[in-house]
Length: 246
Image: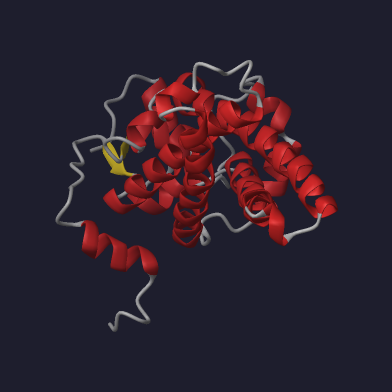
């Protein structure tokens, strides 16, 4: 297959193959290969750097302790747009990598309508239509896509105010701050869901694997396609104390 026609994730998998590997043990499934994890942590790193430097620039009297971490106020102001640009570029690659599984479906609309049951843990397992990502994860992803686009569009007038009018720059500041607050709120939820909310999820972005129990609990349709097994049957077997499938 030619490099121009080959999907991005296949090309990335080949190039990243020499950097790291993913060990899948008994009772586990491959969730995220090396290139996906590298992209994820690049996005996270640039976002945190952008967030911290943004806090220091936005409110130096409240976040005066941040600027010294980046070499002082002037250096922090210089680094912030570069960190933000790095975030947008890294996230653009992540978007290309995930645009397929992040495509919205009718099942995701039903999931959103049943959000209360998910938050309150009314069901022991997710609906059998939940694939690689659920509706909440997809909603978060596309919110970040929109926010990153707002960051990019509003960032340049703030970076080069002399090239834009005062009105454009003023509007850019407001929209930039709104997008930052939206992303910060989503980031907090994302951290909670990836750690305490769904134990075992964090492993998928460190080791790249998840347990079969985690898969049939949170993403039954993906579990079916990845393992060839029935998620409901394996869930019921586990409740009865049967050993997990190999």
